[in-house]
Image 1 (tube, rainbow, N blue to C red):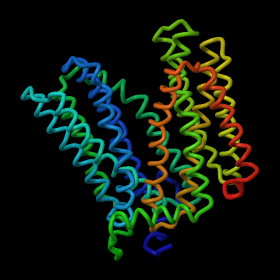
Image 2: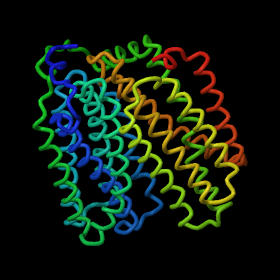
Image 3: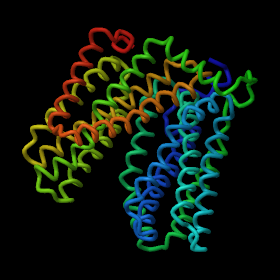
Image 4: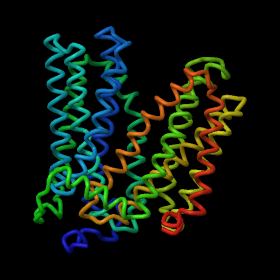
Length: 410
């Protein structure tokens, strides 16, 4: 480890670590702004454009570029001043929001203009995450990485919960023009805060290679690491067989089994979100260091068991409880895996590895949704898909216990 980086990684309390506080506060501004922006974007399509059928196109334009450009963001995180990358990601998105406010004022924010703004907003957002996540292990001592990731994940979950409520309040009090300007001010504040963070690696000489060469180096590095390769396979299996069947089953089961009321859907979704929040808090309080690999494997097994349990839930409170427990498992896995990746990865390749894992993880979720939708259209019942997905996760966790030595013994 380079002395310049090692020197900032002290064992002090995280909340006395000024560099961590800068990252954390910036994440708060970014997370809340994105959560509110997505709600405002959806509501603008429905209320101002009167085109609810086009909502999917706008959401796709916002989210897909984050997957497509995240690998490129990882390359940039390994070869640029990461604090500046975070700054420009926030500041440029603020400019996009100012442009949108101006277009609203001129009555020119049409569907195509919004589609273009959404695509650019999502593309710039893709560069934020790899740089932020690769900075974290250089400013936090290894013993505190799990707790630091827990705090960041807890913040993300709170932003996801509070963002829509805050957005609804803002839209009740202000017009779209002013809400976009408020969000622009929030992102600008975040960019000004991160400007105070000095990237310890920013002045190091870097060999200049093409983007493709750098991406290939990252892939070769992941392939050569049994642990990272195990994580990649795990992301693929879990996101294909778990996320799609579980998430699409909730509204179907509410409609067919629990009365078909929106309040039922909100109860189950709230249980899931609360579980994610509690799981993140538990990881921060426990700061698990020993046996994390085995714990991750057993949490995957419990996710599979949760899918099978949802299938036989006869009351909405029972389904909400199962989703609460599944949320705890997901948060625990995400935080411990992120910490293990950060600890086991060469700092010079941190950005590429974090972005590749995120790309694989996020990229297979739409494929899972599409696959489940196709199977449902073919007449396969959602209950059968839950049984298949839960059984697959349980079997895969047993396979990891037997053959996944790199993860089991990490």
